[in-house]
Length: 465
Image 1 (cartoon, rainbow, N blue to C red):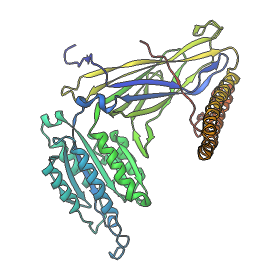
Image 2: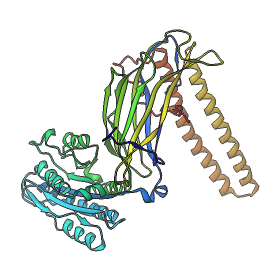
Image 3: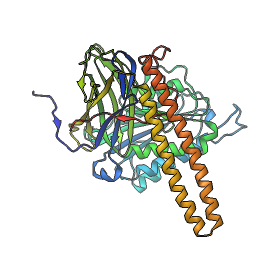
């Protein structure tokens, strides 16, 4: 149809996969909030060298008084702004991976105190950016978030159409305080905002809202961690921004069996000390859903959980029969599209579809789940014991008391680590078994019994060839 953009036939830089923690459900029981993990993974950096895009980044830095002093008279200086300057040096260095990446710096409180144009990260541009950042000084009035955000948006909006097609735009927002006048409607949503909240004085709700509305991220930094963590996290973020391989990544969900519905979708994921936000919606009478993941960088993994309500089986033939009398029920089809960031026309690329299934059994299947995990860990411990028996025999044969002592210490530490992992895994298996016996309803308003327990091994769903 004229005017519609066709999906491009291209080698995918992004892979889609699905996993479940629950391999089977008894036929005569329903399961509430059946969890399905969806993962989106980009190819490693070595495989996508020519697929990255250029970026234009605006750093909006709050210059309120408390960024430099702990008292209103200026007698108790702190190093918050100093740490921001050190961290920005990492950002400037990373943007220099391609001299055509650009950076603008905005310093603000109630007014814009500093605002630069987008500078290419050549050696000269990097030096100019460092000098601008180092010249920032705290100001004596409270800050207005909209001042910094609107200035950042104005800089990115002011690019030509060719510049916008060539480079992705991002905003880095750094603050250690609140703004009581700031409302969600004041958030400019055209560009992802990566918000950093410093010390306990910052406003988590407002910075989370910035990230949530724009598919950005929110990273809190405690005062004791400023010296190392702020530079580390801004370093990691700027590396990711300069290696984006996919944009507008969208995952589509469709239930495949009568009565199976999408009960809820996650809209954020805690990853690497940051909250990463997605946009999610449930539609079609709860038989479909959509999650907009947004940008994905080389080597990056993004993840969210889909929760399904699965009804009791309608009969013995519910699902596809297996040789042992059980049946396999198709629950959910997961697919999606993304746009390759290096493609100036941003044509859509299809992601491979994945099918989520579950086995419907006549018996509970719960005890089988526990027995499976116990058998697995017994084998692990036997293999470990055999390996260390061999090491200790070799050390004794070499007549080295130090080697024997080291081997014994290593065995003890390994057994302790294995035991911890085993207890956690079997604990999870028991929780799952109990939930299966209750039909998936944990009795706490439908929330998962696994919600606060250690992670369990995941069962990959089928991916059609």
